[in-house]
Image 1 (cartoon, one colour):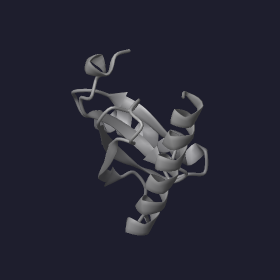
Image 2 (tube, helix red, strand yellow):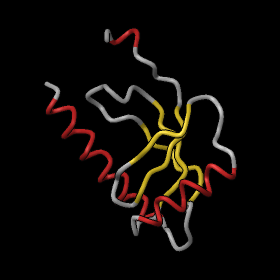
Image 3 (cartoon, helix red, strand yellow):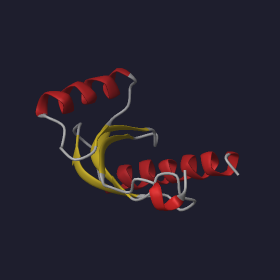
Length: 100
């Protein structure tokens, strides 16, 4: 897809402590029920995570910004988010390298 046609609208999603993420939608924040369901599914994998907003082109060489909106589980701190974000960025780079 040509760069000028890529969607760079902010996207709501969930970021897990291991850096994996899943998108929740584009223009409307997920409902409290959807957030609770996502939190439960993340916890089933023995992970914790955050509701985030991803801003930018997810298919660009430079990773998009990930804005933390709120923690989904108790006991998460800034260092946990920084580690998850670092893992997200590394995974993004690996995918982009494979697509070259």
